[in-house]
Image 1 (cartoon, rainbow, N blue to C red):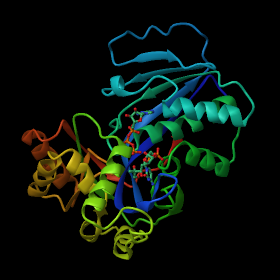
Image 2 (image 1 turned 90 degrees about the horizontal axis):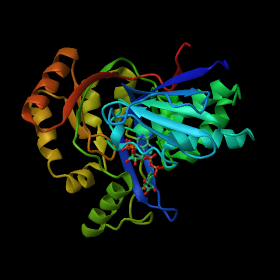
Image 3 (image 1 turned 60 degrees about the vertical axis):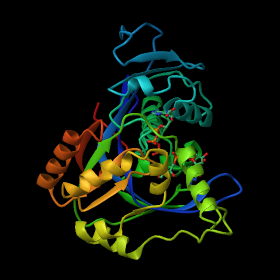
Image 4 (image 1 turned 120 degrees about the horizontal axis):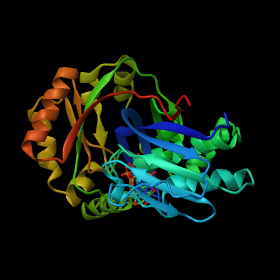
Length: 328
Ligand SMILES: C[C@](O)(CO)[C@H](O)COP(=O)(O)OP(=O)(O)OC[C@H]1O[C@@H](n2ccc(N)nc2=O)[C@H](O)[C@@H]1O
Ligand SMILES: Nc1ncnc2c1ncn2[C@@H]1O[C@H](COP(=O)(O)OP(=O)(O)OP(=O)(O)O)[C@@H](O)[C@H]1O
């Protein structure tokens, strides 16, 4: 496909197990990271820029920037104002990386339709990076093999390879080494979106600080090697929500709550409303609630919104497919 534009749709993620090992000399932590893709999506459209203004109004949550070397970026959606429009944007970095690999100019116009919360612990920027790779690859007709796309994803960020593949997967190393996992059914989730984000490096630093303060140490020699939970993998395989609820864990949760103490009220609210499990999503501050069925998910979402302990609540299901091109 090498038409005038290409659009990729990419899911958010929740980590149903996030076991964090010690701080490595390269500044990353070894992980046993069980990712589950969930049905909240960003869309990334790549099109041939013609250099003309597209008429998007200022102040409608849409910005525009020529990021140099021919990449122009616009973003729409409720959180658009919080998305960087310069070269730090992961979608821009992805387009430039793909162009560089194919020895071509990254001349492209990118538009992100943002629905995944920004800095929310749901891999929104990673989704946009994976989406930009797919959309630009289709627009430019560069036909990059899947293994090369995956390697580029890993260069862009630890969560990006999972955004590409979706479904459910175990991430090892810093999270980029993926093993696909079987899932036996549909899981119902509620996400409580917070006001403002949390910085992922800051949450990892807080995790280290809490470990040091507890006297256990935070480096690779002090923290046991993280391992996936057999109970959790069984629960995913069998599609058993109650068993999954009993096995979920997030080693970054205490750090996220330490930086944002109000999250504990959000977690309690969802539990009181009938959630089978309540946990911080990745590095937070989004909180994730596993529900028994769609009706229970709707009741938990209503209780969260009524409580005022979140900005808004969203219901969805998992697993969701990975990054996909939409029909032209
Ligand atoms: C919290 C998670 O979302 C769970 O899936 C990820 O581990 C974060 O993945 P990400 O946002 O793609 O992170 P990256 O862009 O690769 O790294 C950002 C920063 O997070 C910290 N980081 C990230 C991944 C990891 N395994 N250990 C870390 O300590 C490092 O300070 C790193 O500089
Ligand atoms: N396309 C993008 N969308 C959102 N944020 C981006 C993007 N590109 C770069 N960023 C920057 O990355 C930061 C983290 O954003 P992101 O939404 O990816 O966080 P996150 O969902 O918590 O990430 P993760 O769950 O992978 O740790 C933002 O504060 C922003 O400065």
